[in-house]
Image 1 (cartoon, rainbow, N blue to C red):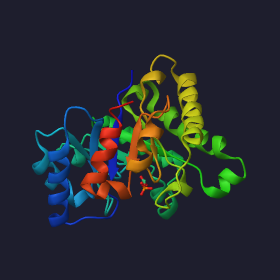
Image 2 (image 1 turned 120 degrees about the horizontal axis):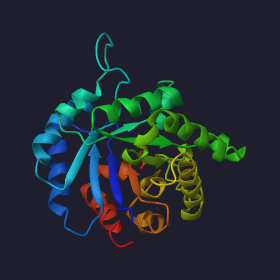
Image 3 (image 1 turned 30 degrees about the vertical axis):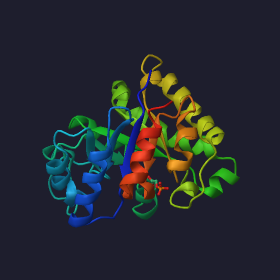
Image 4 (image 1 turned 90 degrees about the vertical axis):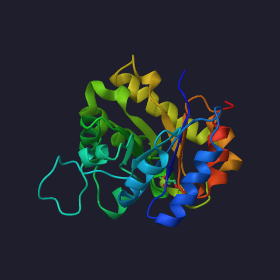
Length: 250
Ligand code: PGA
């Protein structure tokens, strides 16, 4: 049985002051019944997360990582650096990185490996654009995106988390229906089973794209939806907590 996992992706939002009250609000509202949970904060705030969340049930992580171990890569942050701040997770291949920073699936795969090498859990994002969905390319697109990662992570498939995030649903208020999302999640799991039938059943596949308190329970009730990657709704403690608690009743 896979545990549910709810991860907040703060994107480029927050400040020392607003993070402090958001983190305190979430930590206070967590009780024994919810899904496992984490927040992925902008890199400058990871020390703040570490200080505020030490000993709490809420884990933390980053939104991106360099594929390189270190050296002359101005502006980059290595997986070992994230480890210094006790990050458990790092998002790789978010569609905003793919779109605005021209990240290829091959680079995303290398980032996933860099995270694994440092003992972090990469949350590998895949998802199709609206044009790709309308052209009936959804399964081809996500298969290629995940395939690049499977080729490099090899035997460590059991150490990754996958997130299906249809690009047209991110920040738009449009959510994939539970059935639409489940169909893609099942395909992704079948692809992982081709790679390693023994561990594929244990890999958590999160859904992301306008998940909110109103639709979280229904989405997470699907057999292959193991939690959520939450953008906008992760910026309000009450909404984020409601999603975490929705993950406990399935
Ligand atoms: P959203 O973002 O929940 O605001 O749609 C999700 C994401 O981009 O991870």
